[in-house]
Image (cartoon, rainbow, N blue to C red; front, side, top):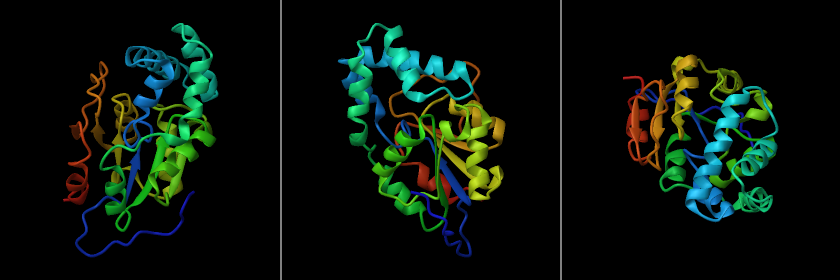
Length: 222
């Protein structure tokens, strides 16, 4: 659900005007759900890698569920794997510290999701955080998958905030290609220790937890 109310900006605040979040890796532990649906962590990682290859290769939006099914078939997983992933979707685990970070930011910043999935699955996943989002932008709505700049730009447009006044919390190193092209400073919540993609710009901060995000955002405009 989207919320159109404006946050408070007290004198002396140095928060950005808005914080945009990757959803399925920065805030939610979609890794464990993919692994469970695939039957093991190695199978889940292989499936997810193939899905990402298809996603970043297509650019313009192709139905998310179609890409998930195609990736499963490409790596030899049965059709039951994508169905299991969807069946577990409404139980996506929340990373530790995610809800606390959002609650701390809510009085100071507009909050938005920018996620690579369908509108339906994005809305359902965003509800797991228990926050009134100011915008939930999916690749289906934007018409393109990240790291194409258009999903990030649509979120900024919806929030009526310039890129220089906003921050992004990423879960994937590929987001840095998109955020750099738009001009968004980025915190990479690299929970599972992914390698930075070749050629990807550096994040302002890379951390395996969200603990450093609030101090960084609190002094964002220092």
